[in-house]
Length: 156
Image 1 (cartoon, rainbow, N blue to C red):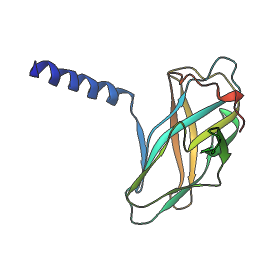
Image 2 (image 1 turned 120 degrees about the vertical axis):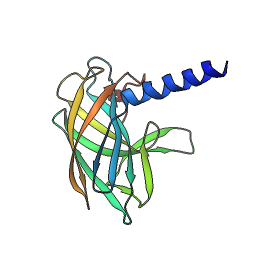
Image 3 (image 1 turned 45 degrees about the vertical axis):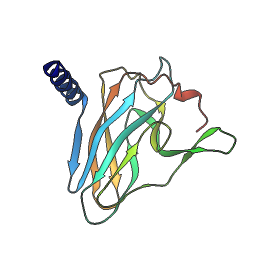
C-alpha cells in the first residue's frame, strides 16, 4: 500500500510539472501565467499567475500588453457586503520583497477585453509584462481548460 501511495504522489507531481511554466527576470519570477479557455465567441478572458519577488525591494506590475486583446487591464475582485463580487480596475499590483502574489479567480487578475482571435486550450499567447523596477518581461500565457465562467458577460 505504501508503494502505491508513493507512486501516486510521484505521478501527481510529474503531471503538475508538465503543465507548469515560469519566466524569471532578475529577482522576479512569473509562475504559470495562464488563461482559462474562454467560451466560443467570448469577447474577453481572464488571466492568472503567481509572481514571486526574491529581492530585497518591492516591485510593481503596472501593465500587460498582448496582441490577443484590444485592451488588457489589471483587476481586483471586491466582495461587497451584499454578497456580490464586483471587478474593479487597479493601477498596479505591488509585489513585496520576499513574497509571492497570486493572481487567481475571485481576487487579483488580468482582463483581456476585445479578444482578437479565439483562444483554445493548449494555445500559447505572447505578452509583455511591465514592472516599475524590472522593466519589460516577455511571457507566454498558456491557455488552460475552461473555468466554467463566461467573463465576457461580467461587468468590468
